Length: 132
Image (cartoon, rainbow, N blue to C red; front, top):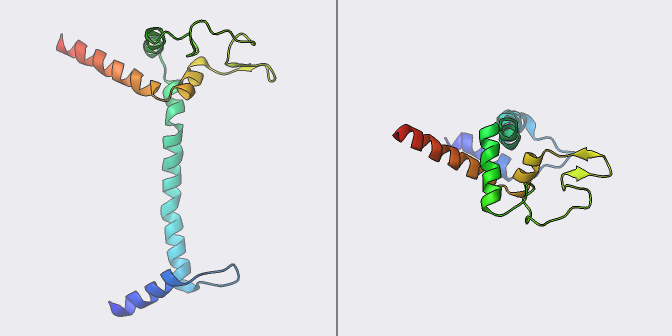
């Protein structure tokens, strides 16, 4: 056990510069760690895209929940106070590019908690239906 741990301790404590080689053991461990890190980055990308997948999956029921939440909070369709006026007609329209952002995407960026609001409302509705 001691024979195996001494080279590993030396490997962990050594500093490597661009001109130095870490040897066979260091290269082998480095390759192993790279193989482990690859899937982690893919998982990170999947999690990062989860919000956009939620937006793509918006149906009329989920959109109605969002609009209801806006009304309850006395906000206009863009999440601002009802009497807000916009120079371009809407905050989702970019006059320079002539493109408009999806309203729901805009709302989820503005109110990150909105996804949780929708999910909770759907869960409550599902529970009410199952209790009937």
